[in-house]
Every structure is written in C-alpha cells, then in structure tokens.
Amino acid sequence: MGKEDIAWYLKPLLLPCLLLAVHETSPFPTKKLLTFALAFSWIGDVILLFADKGELYFILGLVSFLIAHVLFIILFIKQEAYQTPNKFLFGFGLLFVVGYLNAMLIVLFPSLGDLKIPVSVYAFTISLMLVMAIRGGLTWRKPMNLLILNGAFSFVISDSILAMNKFYTTLPNASLLIMATYLVAQYLITFGIVKLNEKK
Image 1 (cartoon, one colour):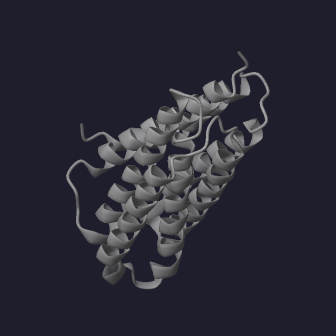
Image 2 (cartoon, rainbow, N blue to C red):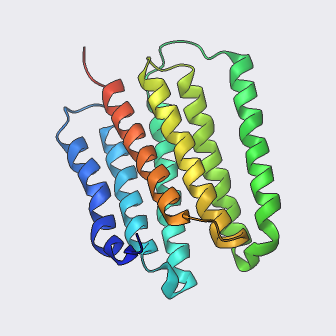
C-alpha cells in the first residue's frame, strides 16, 4: 500500500507477541531455548530496520538471526523423538537441502563482495536448521511435526527471498513476501513446539 513507514512502529511488536504467548505457557524442558531463539530473532528484526543506513546494521542483523538459528537447531535436537526416522526419506531431505544450499551460493556468490564468508556461514546454519526440522518431521509427534517442518521451510523461503532481493535482483513485493513467510515461520515453529511439549 506504499505505507512502509508503518513498519517502524509495527515490526518491533510482532515477535514480543509470540514471546508473551510462550511466557504464558506451562514450563517445558526447551522453553528457555525457544524464548531465546525468539528474542534474538526480535533483535534481528529491530536491527534490520536500519539496514539501509549502512552495511554494519545488516551484518549485526545477520549475526542476531545466526544465533537464533543455532538456538533453533539445539531446540530441535532436544525435542523428544517418538519414532526412528526413515533413513531413505531423511537422506532425500538431506540431498534436497544440500542442493538448495549449493544453488543459492552459486547464484549469490558473484554479488556478495566482502560478505561472502558471513552469508555462507548463515546459509549453512539455516540449512542445518532445516535438516534438523526434517529429521524432527520424521520423528516427532503428529501433527506438530508437520507444523514445525513447514515453519522451518517458510523460514528458508523468507531468507532466500531476502537474499535474492538484496544481492541478485529486485523482486516484486519482496518486503511483503519476506515478512509474510517470516511470520508464518515463527508462528508455526512456536505453536508447534509449544503443542509438542504440552502435557496430555
């Protein structure tokens, strides 16, 4: 709608809503990990509001989300498994993620300049987060396993659109697509983890 200045006031309020929802839930073993992952995501959201002021803000935002994804990885690893993962399906998922990672880096590398290393580290980390979500999708209780897996996929889609728009070519409605997929990702992961840990 051409009113992107509103983001300055609304974007910093999005993740605190999820943080408040998590705070109100009953205690569960990975609650602190989820809380910190959302908190670092929120820090990244706020810092990236200033990304057009200088490259340093983009790097700091990248670091905040990098920490958030490391916490999501640990969070996924620590979730209780209900069954042994199907090795064939997990192998297929792993190959898919490796293919995605290679394709993205091949496309983006010529345009990254001094950001080659930090962007590569970030791309590897979010890919590992997706791998752990795929593993969880094959081991966690249904239907929360699919909610979390779809959330992880949405996160990768959001970051992929952001990276393509920033480093490769301008995409139509990029801001809307980035935020829509990002919010779906955070909500599905948070809702799925909370429900996965609910006591029967």
